[in-house]
Length: 134
Image (cartoon, rainbow, N blue to C red):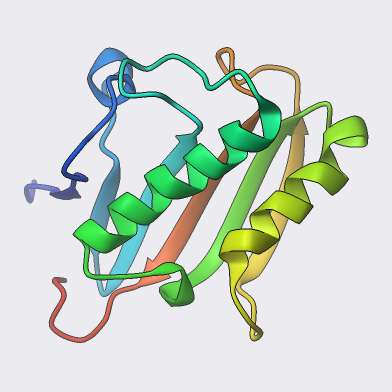
């Protein structure tokens, strides 16, 4: 089996080790980023909902940058949220701060009942720029 080409941000939060997963994997010209939550460095959730979303995007952007990417390279987004019937509009308004201009990536929003103490999670697939790895 080939070794996974793992991408880790410079300041990785504690959840990667605690839950035993990689922040992102490069493969076949794509970057597969694990779901990012509004985790503080120690792994605890940011308590304010809007700030938790902002922190999730900052964590995501740190991983993208570590792979020489940005959100403009993202081609697919999956968002998970607890209580989407009350949180969706607020979450989408905060996400717009990071989303950028059209054309937008594809997006799927999924309502869930549990995110290990978090209210919002974002998972993406990005196209790696030429020369940025496999």
